[in-house]
Length: 582
Image (cartoon, rainbow, N blue to C red):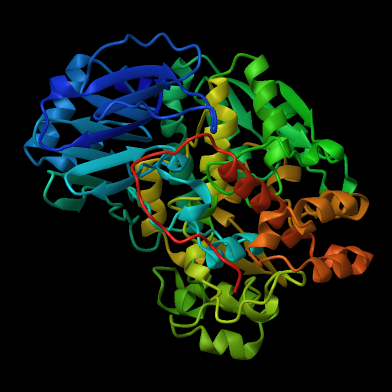
C-alpha cells in the first residue's frame, strides 16, 4: 500500500553556488554528512552543489541534479530525480505535490536553477542573487559573509525583546509552497501549492469535526508505522498527546520523551505519564539542567535562538541519539490547526456555519468569560478580534527595563505569529538534531488535516463555557474516548517560566558578565545599558519581571559571539555597514 511507504530522512539539506547558464559537468557535486556551524566552510570551487546527509546514512556518492532536505515517502533515486526535473523544466510545478513529505529541494539544469519548498515544512532555503550567480543554503550562516556586518541594530534589539525577527535582512527566504526559478537573467517566484478548505456539510457539529480530524490524523501517521522505532516529544499537552495516540493506533513502535524541570510549578510529567500508561508506551524522562550548565559560552548559532529551552533540547537530542532513534515526532502544527490564530470573536458565533443551539450556547458562554462587554460588542465586526485582548504587545509586552530604549520599533504581531518559519526551530535542527542523525517531524503537518481545519468554523477553535475559555475543543473531543479524563479535561497552564526565574535569581553574575560587560556585543552595539542591567540584577522583583528578556538577550549575545568568531568568509563577497552605536 502506498500509505505504508516508510519515510526517508537521509537527506538533511543542501547548499550551492551556480552561475547560469552552465554545463552541468562543470558543477562539482559533494555529498557529505551534515556538521553544525561553525565547523563547516564552503568549497573554493566556482560552481558547486553540496548535499548534506544524515549522520550514519548510507547515501551513494552519485552525481545527481536533485538535492533534498527533510523527509520524503520514497527513497530518492535517479528515477525520482528525472521525474522532478521533468515537472520543473516543463512548468508543471503543481506536480511537486506528488513528492509527498515535508521537504525542500534544489535542481540544477543547464539553463536554470530551481529551488522548491513543500507547503508543510519548517525547513527552508535561504538565497541571494548577484548578476548571473545564485547562492543558496539550508544554513543562513553560509551566506552571512563577514558575520556581524549582515545585521542591523534594530533587528538585534527586537531579538532581545523576543520577536520572531529574521536575523539576516539581506538574505531572502524561500516561502512554503513556492518554487523559485533563476535563469541567470531573471527570477520567478511561483506559488505552486496552497490549502483548499474542505467544509463538512452545513449543520455538522463540533463532534463531527473531531471525529473526522482523528481519522485524518491516524491516516497521516501510517507511514511512521513502517519506519522503525519512533520517538515522540511528549510535553503533557493536548497536541503531543493526540500525536502519540494516533501513532500507537496506526501500529507504530513509539517511545515517549518528556523533559522534566524538577520545579513543581512547571511540572507536566503527571499528564505525560498518564498518556504513556494508558497507551502502554515506554516513558523516558529527561531531567532539564537549570543550573550552571543552562547557558554555555561554547554555543554557536547560525540563527538566533531567543527562547529558554535550548539546553533542554540539547539534553533531549543527546538522549534520543543514544537510543538510536531517527524520527522524533512532535505536536507542532496543533496550534495552527485547532487554536485561533489571528481572528476570533462574536462575528464567528453569529455568522459561522453553526447550529442555532450552538450559537446561543457560545454567546452565553462569551458573556460569562473573561472578556468585557465592550470587547464583545466590538468583535461583532471581524476587524476587531478578541485575540487582541491581552496580547504581549504595547502595554502588555514583556518588560525590557535594561535595554536601551528604541522608540518607534513596532510591536509587529503579524510577524510574531508568522508560523511559516521560526528561527528557534530551524536552529535546533541545524545545531542539535541533524548533527546527531535525528529528523524531527510533525504528523499533524498533513494536507487533509489542514484542509479540514481551514474549512472548520472559526468558532470551534475556542469554546467559552462556564466562565472559562476552553482551548482546542476539537482535540479534547477527539481524545475524550481515547485517553484518561485527567489529560483531555486539563484546564489552565502551569508556570513554565518558574525554572527560568530561579536561574536568573541565582546566576546574576553570569548574566552580568555575559550581556553587561564591556566585551558584550550587545553593549558594544548600544542595545544593553550596563547601568540599567545592574539596577535590574540588584532587585529580585525586577529580575522576575525581566526574566524573559534576560534569557532572550543572553541567547542573542551567544548568537552574536558565534558569528563574530566564525572562521573565514562565507558566501560571495559583499559590502554592508557595520552596526554602530546610535
